[in-house]
Image (cartoon, rainbow, N blue to C red; front, side, top):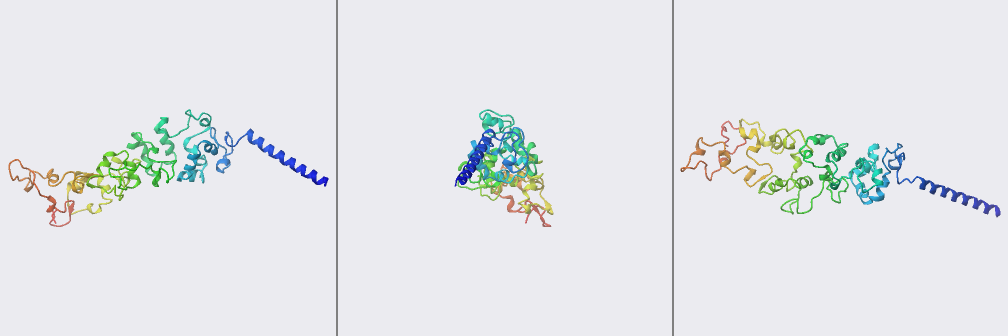
Length: 340
């Protein structure tokens, strides 16, 4: 009986000593601080060590718990905090924000190399965008640095809600930011696709044009701004997706492409000679109604300019297309004047 009691006392004392030793180890080097040299495996599962200036990922959660939980629900969060493909992604929050050691010591002061991506920090926009482009530099974003948006100081986070899941303030496509209901369009009951909502937050003149009687079907959601324009830049004017305006239009209006037996020169040159691309008060999005539209070129020759009275040079109450219906081009042997 005495031997059994002694054995129990021995094992109990050993257990107390082990627990005390473990607590002392944690106090001397707490894993939450993530000192330089801490194994990266604690954060990412790999066997390499944290770079100088970086801290353990759990340290971010101690202050930014709401933001970290929100980020975990995003596409980037699933990748960087769940299945990182390399050491850079394994840094999770600090892969984008930069080393967090100095930020941890002085949260209210700017830290060298640390980015918060807030408008109130007045960080160089190029530095912020370059941090995004470190990963997102291929494909359509290859021309970003030479784009109109970049030259005007647009930040990636002005359009993309990186930290917010789809259920919060972001939209499914590329985590685009939502706009408050009623500010996207003059008519708040018109539903459009996410890309259009983001673009029209700044391009207010186009917002007005697509609400005109004759317009591209943007507000109906049948197309988006990005169908014609690359928002991240490109080698063509107006950030179009093709070198010529006509090539962009022909993607949908293939019947106007030709080739025709009889070509209408203004049509072959540029669709914008007659049409406004986003919307117009005139039928078919015309620059100005017929016959004045046609008589900007066809004036002083034959019947269009024969005045009924002195001072009248335009045909009144007539439509040139009543007779010249194949105005974009004709394949009829007798269609030299674009008649039926």
